Image (cartoon, rainbow, N blue to C red):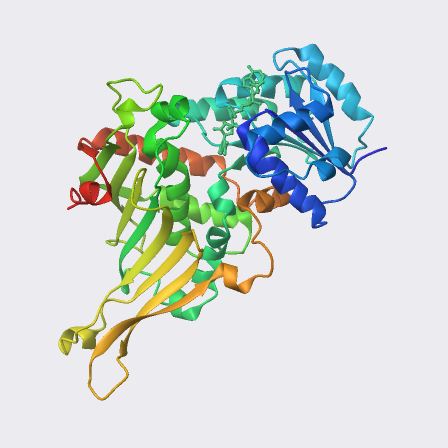
Length: 447
Ligand SMILES: NC(=O)c1ccc[n+]([C@@H]2O[C@H](COP(=O)([O-])OP(=O)(O)OC[C@H]3O[C@@H](n4cnc5c(N)ncnc54)[C@H](OP(=O)(O)O)[C@@H]3O)[C@@H](O)[C@H]2O)c1
């Protein structure tokens, strides 16, 4: 039977597939957000039947997979990723399931070291036909490890595929509050009219983690917090916070504005700090002399008419007090607050990304009672309190957007190019490196 949608996963025996992709696809299928005429093809080099594959993949994740659903829509298929003949045979297999209208998604849940080989074979076997908008390739960060390597990966992909066929995933952009950021900014007069350097004194973008590197030593030690977190997630958030309103609510216009922000960043080199948590060198497979940073802090200015002069504080690190990610917008006091010397604090808008995503606004208010005392109060909204059932996982939104061809949440090449330019500058400029015991220890180094 011909299918309407085929999702083929390279690297189907890995962590990403087990923990994120299969649960997201199953949820989309069960909620009828994708067609029920769908086929998932799990590609791997191991000798599995579909049933053996499902047993194996269930063991990789703590959460129970919906195996009964997957049995109806998933097939395991063995392939050697270096062998073009295997791809040609697979193409024949797939042609029995497709017609020209079938949407075919090739998801690269594989490391960057084998992406080139797979992309070449996928192209040469015509699994993905050049410029066919129904054939698309999806891959995840890391998008290179510096500007030069990112350019090479990109040139390689452009030699086989059209830009419109490439979906680069930064899963942070699928998070509910990141998607909500533009709505909060542009659909609320009280925020949009004050979203500039006249009203805003400071912006914090903090992504804190409580855990260490867990089992990711091999990857993490070659990357570090700057490349793993800042190059993608934090700079993406920064560009959404600082950009001007796009001419139209359309992905290309939005990306144009984000790129303008990324190209106008100036680092405050005085304050940048790299840190490494105490005990990092004792983690398994970490070289004893590793200088990889697990913490990064710096201030950056966005040289646009809207935000010139406003410091953006970027902070991310591991082994901190608790896992939390948020954006905090701090406003200047009103003239009256200053003139009357009121015992008040600046207004703050806090956008919580995780956990408990939502929005919180702190304002000054009179304490109820006979005296004239003032206090800071919080107006708050938690996303979870306004939805019935579960909030969809980031990957559900991202996969649905790939199926429907919505590109806003995916990264365009010039965003990556601009962010690597900046990250390379930070890497060169930052000399201060401290070993920290805990959060207050590392924060005590910030001026
Ligand atoms: N895991 C996440 O949450 C996450 C989040 C963001 C980005 N990513 C990115 O997504 C990619 C995959 O991550 P992952 O965590 O799923 O990695 P992983 O657990 O190491 O899985 C890698 C997959 O690639 C396959 N593979 C590796 N070398 C191969 C080879 N030479 N020939 C054939 N297959 C090969 C593995 O097959 P075998 O099982 O046969 O070895 C496995 O299926 C990476 O680029 C990662 O940076 C992952």
